[in-house]
Length: 178
Image: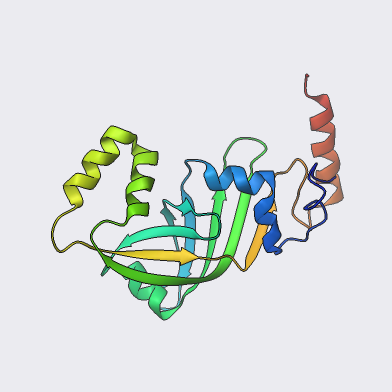
């Protein structure tokens, strides 16, 4: 089972060129929430939902300066991010790498874009205007992925999906009405 795009059909999980697959491009441009996994100060894992913006090269996440998340990411910048859908079959994009952090004065432009996309133009603009007060500091969290995984459970599966599961999925696909 391969992609119609032959340049990505045989890429292994982990290859950053998977970012060019239709599934990855769809998930990176959709109004979805990502899940950010990182290590907390006490050494235990954290998993939180975050809004994001894909620039074409980097995934941007915004945070308010002084948060525990920023403190923890400064100490341990290795992260994993998952962007996925819940419909069947799900589409999944998994990213790994180290983030870089840049603190800025005021509202990050990317944060304003994210809020408008998620809340709608009017509500997002009202929210941004309400928080854009003197002294506000935000942090741009940038991930340039070094590992990429894509699953669509139609053409691309986990590398260790059992044969009976693959057969059942293929049978279900052929049974769908056209």
